[in-house]
Image 1: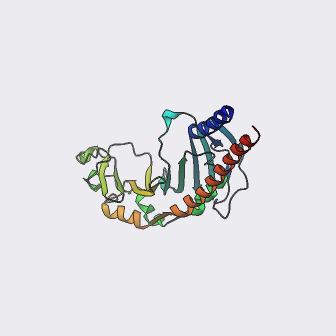
Image 2: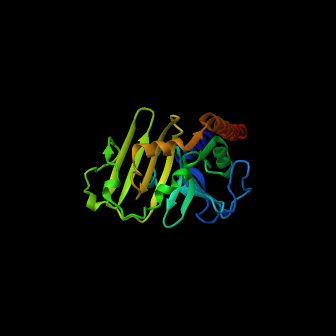
Image 3: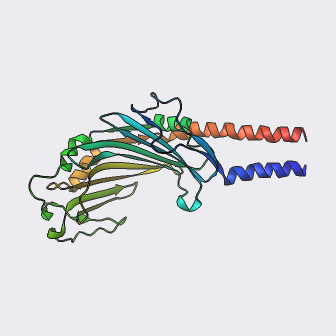
Length: 278
């Protein structure tokens, strides 16, 4: 009986404290098509299961022209390097480092249950997620004007509490315009400034973060540009209107609960047979 209790404790303790996560290094799984729940790879390369992990991650990066999808799985073993939030972050937008603006969509999923970054879990994530955007209508804002940049082109205002937002930078020190915004269930905050950063890249993006624990979400958007009036609140409204991201909490979490229930049932069977043959 004592042996049975000891082994049961060891099983429960190990499940509670450590998990196994899949690991598939970055750049080892690139596909020449847009991966979806309906167009999904049968397997990925160089994937391994890492025991004694603390948190699991899935990252997927989609690109266009040409169509590409990069899938990365991460097993995090460093307790100090991670938060305990269970969340899905989804980013859509464009980057411009030269004459061409490049579209990109990224998801990053973090979880803390056993093997929660498996391919089957990724497929469930994708089937629960809907995205669409027409941000290409705003890409012209990422192309610098032929006229030399002027600091007075930048709109300046702030009600932001999430960052230090300096709206008093002199025009002669400005190198580009920036607008960032966040919105949750209770508040909308904006930070519109001119920046003194080196304008090496221009960005237009929309982001949503979904908290799996309390089923809440927050929204953020950004534009970094060198075009007259490119960082006004109206441009922020356009970014939000031209972006659509929806995550079905019920579809994802209810299916996941069913999977976890099966795992718990398997553990009960193990304990039952141990007791039967003691």
